[in-house]
Length: 254
Ligand SMILES: NC(=O)c1ccc[n+]([C@@H]2O[C@H](COP(=O)([O-])OP(=O)(O)OC[C@H]3O[C@@H](n4cnc5c(N)ncnc54)[C@H](O)[C@@H]3O)[C@@H](O)[C@H]2O)c1
Image (cartoon, rainbow, N blue to C red; front, side):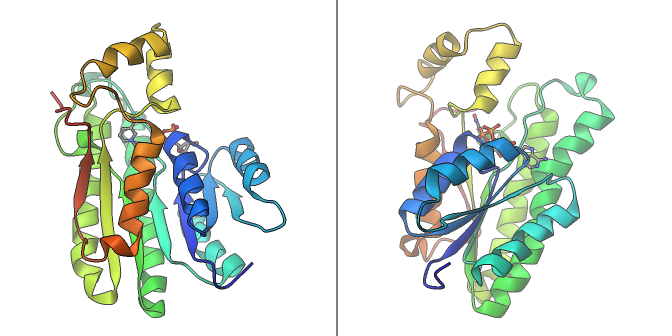
């Protein structure tokens, strides 16, 4: 592994947005330490990107355990000798009003969407501080800034990610660590498509209809989000810290 190459840890790397982020970062010369619960998806990423040079270092596991969250950060340093960027992208969507939300739904959502980010950020910030800086990009949601209908567990978890981002961005700017969040509205990924399928709708038809509700004319593709993450990670965003960026095609949450 080249020590010249920057290292990024990306969680949920085998998912819709995660794969796009991984592609973008590798295209920018990063080595990506890819985390996901989906071990097969990670193997596919490795076979796509690892040729003569190892560009993906995969580590499968469950973000509900503190050991895995911290281990992912430690593994990056162990395997590549550095940590420049952390992208907390993994997440789950939990649907239903509060009356339909079980205790298990609530804690699972907060464990994966929020507590895992607390663990990875705490470990990464300690390391980045010692090494003179770095960048963190968290994936929140427009539904963490405004109340999306009938998703209180999801919206609460994403709202907390937005606030955690602002707190860490403020507290660690002086350590040379820029912490920001991207807040997408609807994105064409398995998360969205499986939701339609579960409700008995054809995902392609449902997305065509959803496209009409977006002022820019379509919902986001994963690369639309990856491009913003790439920007926030880059030196072009050197004066942006402790903030959230809405990537919504001008569609309001209602
Ligand atoms: N798709 C959208 O419309 C949308 C909108 C706003 C925000 N987001 C956010 O974007 C992020 C990526 O979502 P996506 O649409 O690519 O979804 P996705 O379902 O395609 O990908 C999510 C990935 O996270 C992984 N993951 C889930 N639970 C995990 C766990 N416990 N341990 C390890 N890995 C786990 C999954 O295996 C999956 O690969 C999420 O945080 C999501 O909330 C998505």
